Length: 354
Image 1 (tube, rainbow, N blue to C red):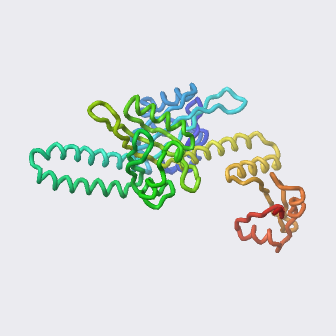
Image 2 (cartoon, one colour):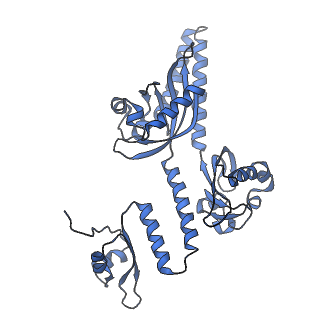
């Protein structure tokens, strides 16, 4: 769910997901004050102070349990990001909430199994045979969680070699299985990190505190794609304080990052459209935004001619003049007209260069 709130604590925009969480339409929320939606107790307790910090230019992150009218009790991370609209001194807050309930459940299970395993090891001196049988059962349960978890679980050396990864982590990076991944990746900083300096940042935090939480980085997959990941890890040390290895869990937050970018682009587009007086300027702005979000280099907008029933090119970006002249008017029954009427995607090369 995502929303934009002004410094009067009033909703000025929410997406459909935000409305669904409350069993409402976005139009039922926009224009209302935050306390009217959340209640005065929740507003005074934490929401107001987070918004005030955001209005002062600080990004605020908060995790905790939230009771949604339509979704029930969910464990979420809420991010308050400051934003100042162009040509104004107003301070707004972009508020995005992420559902981390599944991650919380898995981390709780992993913590519980780890504690149980440690306890069993201590009990082995009392009853070795009985403890060994129980340990095997616990280890089997832990192995099953390790194999089936929907998050990446790993163990690495401080110098950047993987010792152990689960299937999800290997597949996330484009490898068929953990064995293939371990054979291929021998240097984490240079082979996985898009920015090797982020690996240095991670190691500095680990060396300082022995634990790293919510560390975001970009990783390169086997086919060259970029993934946004969030790491939680801790150092395992010997009795002298020397680091033996790092154990960690990682989440794929690529979709989350895409959602944040989409919210910002939609907001900026809405603000710019509100300042435009002509249809032609509006169509060009919409086309430019669509091209930027799709990764294409050029494109055009066609509108149906009410007199000829054909299609007229009314706006274009990046198209050659020769190509524009060829497709400026598409009559009924032509190739381009037929594709458009059937609502099919069409990609056209604008030249025959070889």
